[in-house]
Length: 373
Image (tube, rainbow, N blue to C red; front, side, top):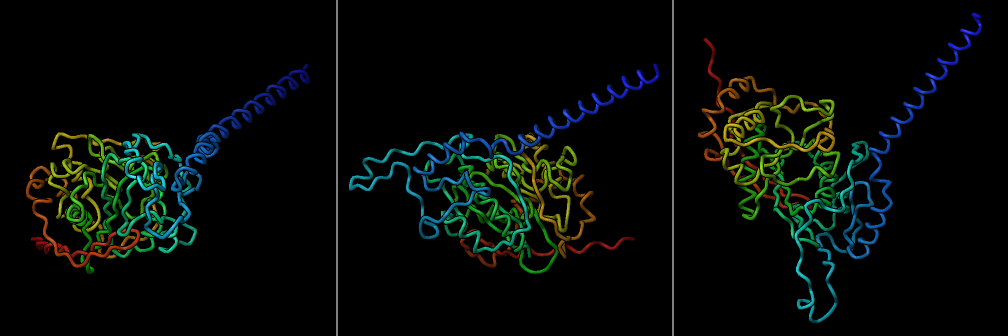
């Protein structure tokens, strides 16, 4: 009797173990296909191959969206209707607006920083990007014109990876864009928000048709090209889940990393604050400005708004700002006098590089702190 009961018990244990193994296998397969389904979609690849015959700039089959060179750097691809005839202008069909959801998106991307990167490689991979880091889709009319602004100082290594990944992503998203590196001159305390205000002003001087502005840190790379870099009806926060936060939003009012505002939204909040010297606080002040002006922050799905951060030590002269918590509490009183309306800076140099436009500016230094007591 005891042996019979022992046999039945062992049989049940074996069945339970087998069931757990089966369940584990099913979960692994679901996760596997969730990550790689789009890369294994033979129909998408088949359509992409057909499209590439008509459009030499089709690039969805490459992991990072890079394209081979079909001519000298900066050359524009011919539109689908281009024909070698004397009455070309009469036979060309007008371009249609770009689709709301671009057809060549890949989905989740493999982002790594172990491979060596050079600016020459980035330039080879993006022959259709014009001088100054500008691009316009050759086969459709973009819905917006986007200026991408990066506050910067001594981050050349990070910039190479950022350009390597973002140029192909933006081209697949059918974005008409220009990339502006706002470089703080000198070694005084860093001021991220003030640099972005400068970028807004200088980008509009360069091209007054910009109607959307994306503000991005140079060490953040999107892990999904369905996270569309464009402006929306409400201010947009793109970096919903960073790897350093476990791919979760650290708190409800977080607006750091990568964000986007239309020209009218930016002016409505009087731009960004100029008085946050050092690390921290300015993104919370911006969130307060948005809320106090009757707007709400929109975000992509957490599964799409994922980012990888390039690990690094904290920059010199960018130590945490001890006054940030007090300043955040006073946004309502300061936002009308402190912002784009009070911006002062000195333009040092504008340099148009093949993959970006570098704008070096002198923005001053923080006011001296009053001694306690």
